[in-house]
Length: 391
Image 1: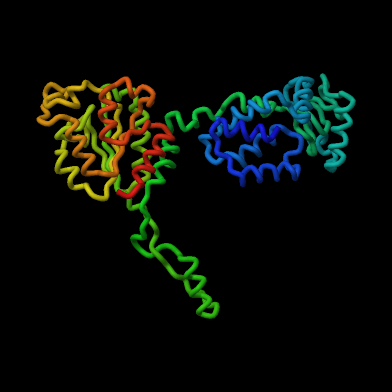
Image 2: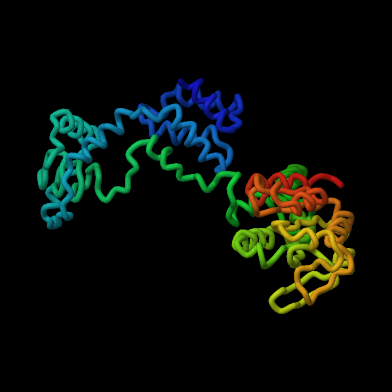
C-alpha cells in the first residue's frame, strides 16, 4: 500500500526523495501515528511535501490511495457525536463544582472506555456517569467537570482525513495558478546579490568565539556589516486597456517587488514601449525611454509585465501606437529589442495562461524578443532563475 502511495505522489508531480521516504517509513515503524488516519495524513504531508504549493497535489494522491479507508478512532468519535444531543450549556453552582473531585487520567480513561463499551452515549442529558450533554460526567459536552474530556462541543470538525483531502483546501496554492503577494515575495527573494554594507551592527559569532578563546576566555565581541541584497530591478508595467482585468494581480507583483528590493525602478507603458515611459499614467508624468533606460543599463535586471496582446501595427509599424494623439517614429518591436540589448538579464511576465499564447501573433513576436513566462508561481520562479544567471 505504501509503495502505491509513493507512486501516486510521483504521478502527481511530487518529487519525493529517498531520504524523505525513508524518514516517512521510520515514523510509521515507530508507531508515532497510531491507528489514526488523520494523524497519518498530517504526518505524511509534513514529511513528504517540501512546498505548500504541492499541498493540493498531495491531497489528490492521498485521496487516490486512502480514499476508502477510515481509522477505528475516527469511527468511534463519529458514532459518539451522532448519539449526543446538543443542549444549552448547564450552569453549576460553586458548591456543585467544589463537590466534583478531580480524577486521575487512568480513572478518566477507564470510565470512558466502560461507558463506550456499554453504549452509554445516546441521548444522555444531565447525568454524572455516561457520555452525555449538560451533565457532570468526565466525558461529554455542555456540562462541567474539572477533569473532563470534551467531545463534540461547538466543534468545527472535518471528521476524517479523506474528507479533508477531498475538500482540496490548498487548491489555490497550486504553482500553475495565479499567486498572492506572500508567494510572490518568496519567489522574488531568490533574486539576490548579497554583500556586506553599512555600519558594523551584526555580531560575527565565529570570529567572536575565536577571538575570545585567544584572549583566554575574556569576551571579545567582533562586529561585522550586515548582508544586504544589492540586486537592482527595473519593473516595466503595461497599464490600462486589456490589462485592466489583471490589474489586481499586477498590483500584487508591484507590492511584492517593492518590499523585496531596495533598488527598484518602476515605470509604465500601454501595450508596447515607445519613446516615452510614464512615472504616473493618471497624471501624465512621462520621461524619455532612451535616457532613462541607458542610465540604468549594466547591472540592472529588467522585468516587463504585460499581456503582449495588441494590434500587429502597434508592434511592427511606425506610427502604430493605439493612442491617436501619440506618434511613434520607430516600431514598438525596435524599442523592445533595444531594451533587450540594454538589459541582457530581462524577462517578460504574461498574466494570460500560456496555452492561449499561440492564438495571438503579437505574443509570439514579443516572446521571440524576451524570454516569456506566465505570471504564476511556477512561471515567476522560472523567470527569477533566468534573471539570476550570469550574463
